[in-house]
Length: 83
Image (cartoon, rainbow, N blue to C red; front, side):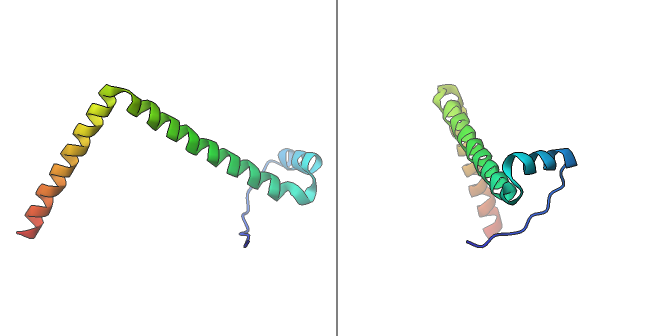
């Protein structure tokens, strides 16, 4: 797999901790694993929030009203453009 070079700025103390705890040649892998883990947890959190939102019947009703209004607006706009 192709790797892309990314430059970041760190406080020297943080970098020294990384080097001493992780090892000089392993910092990139460590940071990459953290990023992948964090992005994955963010996606799961968003999914959970959507599920929680749509499990509420009032929220679902309002979302359907917004969707319907949006579709009607698009249809009206499209008709005006064709004329």
